[in-house]
Length: 377
Image 1: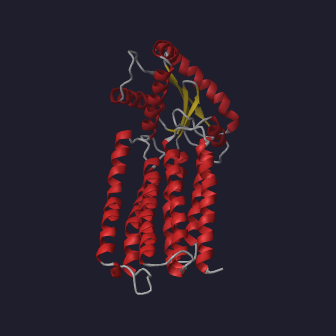
Image 2: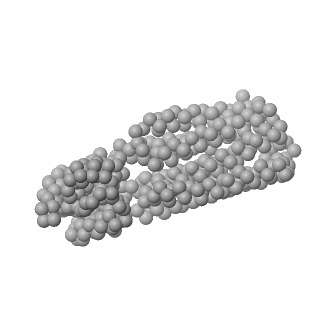
Image 3: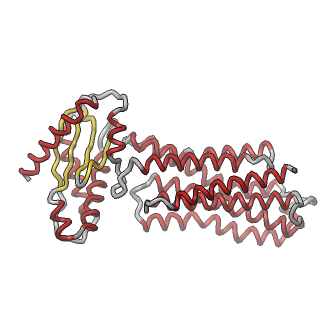
């Protein structure tokens, strides 16, 4: 078997693996945007691997090799690779910017498609005007082709990496920091694989091997997130809380804050459960914003129903309570909820020494103070 034939087989094999992965993703019962973006990313990798397999079969002469077929397969690769890079950038950027609205996401995606659309138009024109500018007498791509092939994808990959890493290290919530860095580190691996393939040989299937490996790694991380994340608020759930409690850490002035939504049953009964869900999401967003103002390792989760837990180091727990309420007021003003009710919370807190054995007692004390706060409201 020729090296081109082996290259085609490996690409087809990687495409089949990703097809199985795509089927697994489609069966997941989750409407989260990041899974939709991840599906697109996997789809475009499959299409690119199949296109690359077609390129190798034409280059080896297994399929008819003439100026038209060579230009066609090289054109497909030169368009599909930027689309793959675009899908990686969109997944990385949007996954690590949960504050973006639907309109912002759509506008962001539209702007990012512009370089690809320009290339899709200009490349056929340049091929038609002067094919020899791109191909030598043996119908092999010249150096300029590889420059055009890589310039847009490299730009997407580099931007995604830099922005994701910077955003990850800027986080104060260390529980979510790993997610940011895993997503951001997807792109350096792809760049490394692409450069390695160019350096060693265009028929060495490093790129498809590495892309498939990284996609599987990211998928496993997303699965781990799925079982540790509350599907409504996108906060940590009690599975993640149990994991957090048994981690080794230095604890100093760490408080457990129990947050409960006031009159939540009344909101559900009067306005419906969909509005109640919106109220919970609004409170979750407010709690996330309040965490940004805290120093040190902060853990936030939905404990159950309309109750949330916040574990944070602070010397002034009352200031944290006021910060939570201020952030909630800001969110209420910013996001309109279609029902005439007041969204407020009651908060109780207790000092925790960091031992899992004492956490239950600490929780009982925080819960007791929370109900005292509710009676005073």
